Image 1 (cartoon, rainbow, N blue to C red):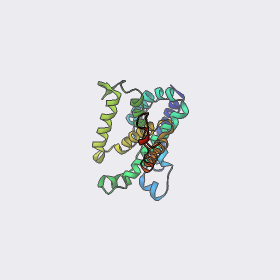
Image 2 (cartoon, one colour):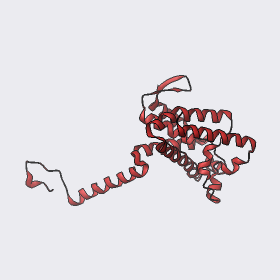
Image 3 (tube, rainbow, N blue to C red):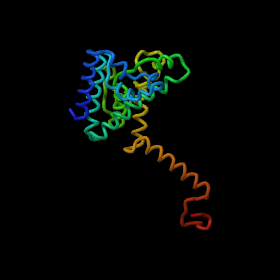
Image 4 (cartoon, helix red, strand yellow):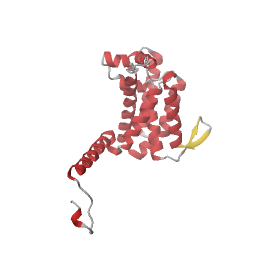
Length: 226
């Protein structure tokens, strides 16, 4: 058990016990897009990750955090792991808020609903695990072993297809997957580094067109501009 994973599990279990003792905690700490937008209760974008709706809910999420988180924390170190977990978890929450503003019936229901659970961050850990260990077998439905890269594709497709009519917040799951993927594609600098790289690449291409720059060579040197 690595340090961050251990304290994440302890924190989640402690908050689960607290909600059993005093259920209204969920109204203040669960993610409600309506309250985030209208009352600026921005802390909910982080606190919802530590609330769960039942024993099975928290058991599965903590099992996933342990299964994928320990290996990733050993690979990255505690600081980078905590940073990634927070970015994907909060990013999943922001995705829920953004989707709740869309002009669809299911979005209107999301706007007035409360989302809880660490699943968004867990899906971020899952995509990271598949990113570094694409061929590591994972059990689909705890029965069929398939490579991690295909496992992520399948659960992502299932979340996307069931999002409009599912009682589970598949939007948070998709948000964790997408934010995690974008962060990892950006390297250790994250999404910001990816955006900077794309901007610099676009700027260089623009300069090449503007100044008509071509690669040179030994032959026909007079026809090349350097």
